[in-house]
Length: 296
Figure 1 (tube, rainbow, N blue to C red):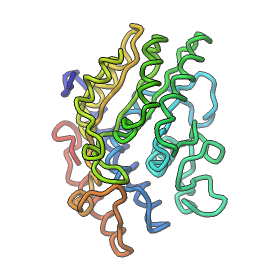
Figure 2: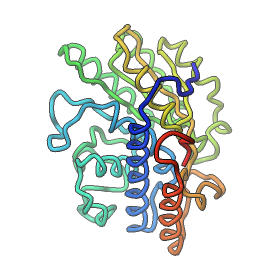
Figure 3: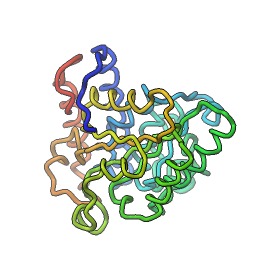
Figure 4: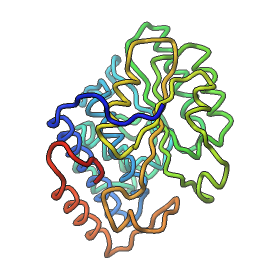
C-alpha cells in the first residue's frame, strides 16, 4: 500500500524530527568536507528515514550500544556509512568530535561501514545483497530467544537485483519473522546507471507482497508519512515481515546538489562544501517550525 500521512502526529514531534534530520544532514556534509568526498547525496536523501528510525522507532541506549535488548539497525549498503555515522553522532552513540577524523587512518569512521571499527555499526556492509540475509538470521535468533527486539535493515533499490535478497525475503516469510523491518531506499541510482535501467524493479511493493511481506510505500522525505509508515510497520505481531519502500531525493535539503545531474556518486568541488552547508542552513531556517511541508 502507498501511505500518505494519516495519523494525528503532534506538530512538536514533527518539528523535533525535522531538527534531527537537519543535524544528520549537517554532520554528513561536515564529514564529506573533511575528506573532500563521500556519498553525501545518499546521506542527504536518507536523513529523514534515519531521523524517524533513531528518534521514534528504535529502542536503544546511546551509552550502551551493545545493550542486549536494543533494536538492531543493519546497514546493508556499506557505502552509506557516512549517513549512518551522522545518525549515530546525532543519537550520542559517537562523539561529534569524531567528525574531524572521518575516513582518516585508524579512524572509527572508515568510508565503508565496518562493525569492528564503529560503535552502533551492527554489520560490515558493502558486499551488496548480503544485509537482508544477515538480518533474517538475527531476527530468527531473537525470535528463538523470545526477545522483543527488532531488526531494521536498510538496503538499496540496486540490491533488489541480487538473488540473495529475494532468498532472504522468502526465508523471512517462511519463518514468520514479524520482528524484521526492511527499509528500501529507492533513489534510482547505482554504480552502472539508473537502477531502473540496469534491471527494472517495479512493481516493488507487489513483489514484496508476493513474497509474503507487508509492504508499505512512502515518500522518504516526508516526515509525517514516514512516521505513519514506521508506526504501521511496528504494529501487532501477525507473522509477516514488513518492508517500508522509501522514494528519496538524492541531495535533499541542499539545492546545489538536488539540482545536480544525478549519478551514483555526486562530486562536490572544494569550494562547494561551504555553499552546501549554507544552503542547508538556509533551507531549515526558512521551514515552518510545526506543520506544513515536510520537504526540505
